[in-house]
Image (tube, rainbow, N blue to C red; front, side, top):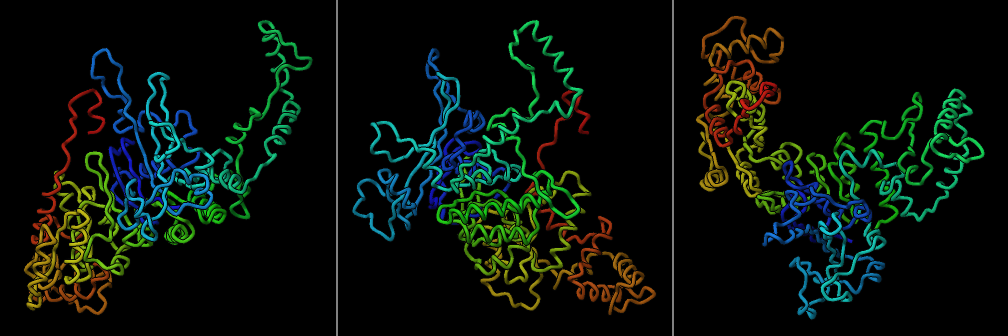
Length: 601
């Protein structure tokens, strides 16, 4: 079973959205773009337990908390504004097909749409397949003064006219949908609360345990007062005082202590799974284990569930990278990709992002409550092997931001952020580039810069380029045109290399101070740094040799750290100033309105 389309209306931070999926999907985007809301929407329509809560939804599940429309006439009652989530499912299991066959429709795989009623003759495989369309409708019931939500078959030919057939909870269980929330699922994964991973495993295996009856009987027979004789006189005194107002007719003691309310639901909430982590540590409650251990154990439970239902497991998982090392992040992503029918994953981690093909990665954007998605593969000009190669070295960070400064080498990648930071420290009116969502990216050569510029630009990012002079005149006309077309700010500086720029624009006194410190610390290696300061031209020659021969060591960045602000290279600061100008800071906080204004001064 797979979701191929999700439509959302008036749900949480999404006013409207229509998203198409092709199997496993990674959703990336800035914070508050709607990634978690999409996962919650899937849970609302597919999850078997979500609607069992009371109430199943509340005010803030509606877009801008608006669930009532003002009446047209003054004396009329307001009308409910519904929220709606609809999914289209394909690759239906035989069991679902047997139980829901009367509600099936047809989905065109190539055109990614439902067939209309008049297109029955076009419903031929392999391009057209049966599908099931479900929708959850939530609204505020004025008469009952409560919120309600129910899931229906969107195509309900057997229902009375104007109504839809409800989807039962047992049917929903057949969909095999699991939602693993970041930082929330792990704490109750091994509890026996309804909807926990352990509870799902027991229900999936069809386990009907006598645990509750036997445990309640044992707890009822547990005599706590026998181990705490000092409590008994207090309880008897309470009984005597109660007896003045309430006739206590019990033949024995009317009051007794129990360790639980002796109900199934209370035991589900209080029963804890203990775990021994090491030989020198006694068992501790599962949530008390380290966060990384908790999340890794959640992965083990997920594998258990997937093995139980290999053909019908749909996972929605928020940020699997939280509190786990990179190798575990990759294992989680690989497991989801290979062992589940379909996985929806949100992530900011390059180790997770690199596991998903560009065609399976959706970059989300939000404009006025309308959420849209674009496949990363639609950003033409970047091959899959380039995507995988660079995803861990800055590509992912840029994709999740608002703009990319593309440079041609590792020296600039290390050095330019130093200059930007120094400029931010010197001028408090500048908005830091990282807060503005501007990231630096090393294209590994000028020849690669146009394709990365095109990639970022197609994804909707602003793009800026900074690169060396073409002193050998090797740049072709089409390369120059591609640079100009794909970068909003396109700077070819006047030097053969970034080291030449530094040597020319950083004061000679600072260059010599830098070289002298290298010599004093014994870090100069094979660089011939004289004991006494030579003429300025010689200082520049030695500095260029040192900076050019130690690109990977970050010596250019180190030199810039030692510079005073007025010693920073003007060519680089002017370029960055033009970038800063495009991202002005937010309006200042008004601190003049109240007694507590100076708390934030």
